[in-house]
Image 1 (spheres, rainbow, N blue to C red):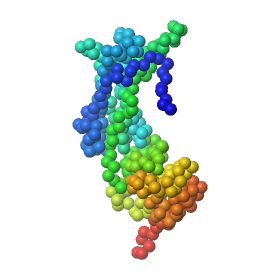
Image 2: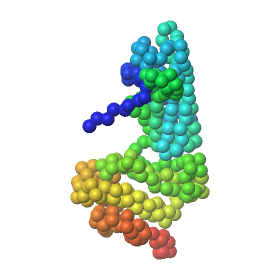
Image 3: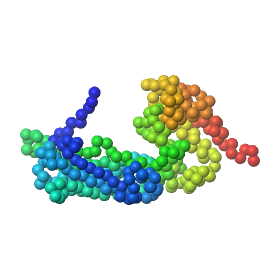
Image 4: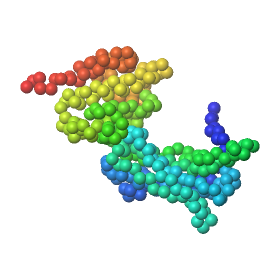
Length: 300
């Protein structure tokens, strides 16, 4: 059943606000940003909104009262948000607001989500004079945030170098993080990511492929545990056989990666998922054994 959002004030129709979001820096289109942007480079977005003539009648707000546009950029991996506001001003019988949102390139990674809000004194229709105005009401926003991708999905495993200190992560050389609501059918590029801590002295060698083999074995072991643990969240609603069918249909899915990993350690998918929940230490040991962790230099 469809769910409609109920607001305690008069809200305009979706068509009563026309908007645009453009990339000003670096010079690029939204679609080409991933090919142009370089890590560390700031991004500047120009956010613009125009009110239709019927905006005022639909909201019941006199045009003499102040209406504000809020431009918002959010980077979930960086756990950071940037905002900028502008008042709507009348020009040639048109109410327009425009602002720039400046995004710190030193902390962002993977993607940025851009959103626009229109905020003002919403009319509640209350008979109580004290409650007739809902100040700071979010009168309108984009149906969904605009996604600005920052990375190509061509890599074998999605990896991002980022400062853990600036993003509130623990001071470790790397971490494997799944997307909170990732499903078995999701693409690996959207479901899970390896973050390498640029604050660590190990980062340059991990990223350029010159780190000791044991480091990569530890990373792969972490990937084993996180992927299988994520898939195990679906044990009650999806059988291992159904996950294997997803893997067969899409070799880039999270289920396909999980099946490949569990085969590499010589266990059925069902047992690997169980161990990720009930015996994670044993699963890690099994993974490291399969990866021949600690074998480097034995033949020397």
